[in-house]
Length: 450
Image 1 (tube, rainbow, N blue to C red):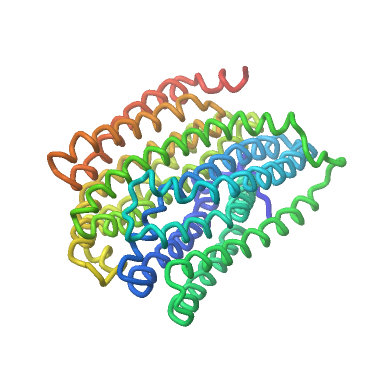
Image 2 (cartoon, rainbow, N blue to C red):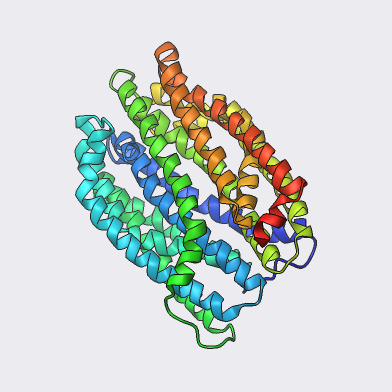
């Protein structure tokens, strides 16, 4: 069902939109973590590192998919808020077609460049064959990844966060079951983990597209265009900066992974420990991003309806929600980071646990602050003000990479983890300046009216 986000108490509206999305994130991260747990315990001695070596590359593809869906979501939300149903349908059809074409292009490129990209990261030769196999299977499923993210963004724009939840629950459970069948029963190892994700994600994507098209068909309007270059341009105006921002983060993570791989040559378990800890860290950050995405849809719908007065209240409510979500993550990761890391692997456990525990103890206290930064980013994206959105995040990453290389010679792999809070805090202060200028002083309203 679709939902008008321009009516009702802002915090209640955001809560009803965000809760299903947060549960969706929990299930999504569950099957990502399940991949690593099953791989680390039953797919072979080096399986966790074999899966983790390609992680920053897969994150680039994910960044393009999520960045693109953000643009589609903002445009769809504005059109829905303005009751422009014909143009809304055109935006949705254009998004699905464009995403399919883009995914096909990236699939070909990914298959051709899989091994060279892993070699460029300095992936150890002992894990290269399985890492390459995992990455190639992942690339084959890009069309499913892109279509699911497109549908997810559009559902959110229409105020429906429950439908994606249902697909993710089914996909998550199916992924775990297939993991166990392929790895334990068929002995397929790391490729089995990849095929399980491919199949589960594929089914979810197909069902999401079918459901979205049926939902859109029930919206009454004049006959809409199936594809519009003008509409693609509007979507790209938001999507391209979002993709660049997300991709920039992922490219920066390639440098981080390369540094991790370097220390992994001599510090046993560093790659595996980082792989485990970064998945837990991503779980927390994705929850903040989910709230940010709900802020984007909320802001865009209200801007489309001319309800500028509701934007500031919505951002404050989102900031409070992110702080509340951050508390359990910060406590659990700081106090029990080692125990949580230990569930990922039994082989080479001591070094893996040490690495994961230290990483989480360094970064988790800062969750209480970084959540608000991510919420501000979502509001800027919903307002269509993309330069501030890109600036703070890109600076965060540059600073993080630079400090990782500065600190690691003194503290070895632990120095890499210390760079996270430095980048986060500088980016937060920059975002607070944007928040004051665009939201508190009201410059955003003037900007969006231009």
